[in-house]
Image (cartoon, rainbow, N blue to C red; front, side, top):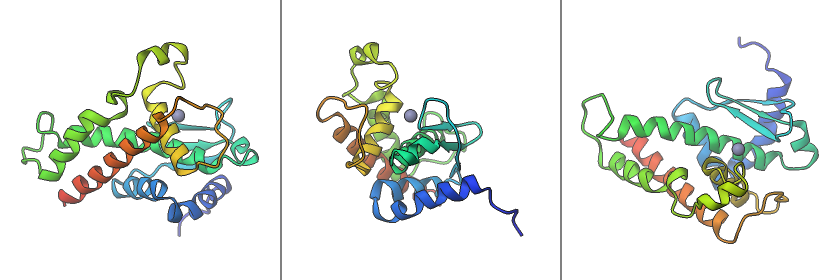
Length: 192
Ligand SMILES: [Zn+2]
């Protein structure tokens, strides 16, 4: 028998469940994290000023109670899970790209499609990201934050957006992220 689940985790899981089935970017993200066995432990707990945090080494996502009071928990969970997914895509990239892989197997066509797209579309490479913006607001225009905000915004367009950015940026970055999720899934399946 497993130990009794931490109540902070039960709340977080309940916040996730309805959206896993109905918001495609949400279900794709949770499916991919499960497929690579890296679904983060999800907690509701204080996170200082932020609504959520992702800790890559612990593989944990914390969602602040404030995110629930402000009705922004779902967007915050998707934002943090997008950070987790991007971290894992980066690891997979180095296991799949022929320049870096160490298993001496040749890459599948699907792996080559993913690594090629990853070189062009991963957040830090997106042609849309302008370093001038990053000088003005280093947090919001950080490439990983731009991608995480874009995916969450696209998944939950009705949630209030305290950090609006110029037109097209969220929509285009969310589309680039969707392309990468699709190619990543195909690449992971091709290795089986
Ligand atoms: Zn973030």
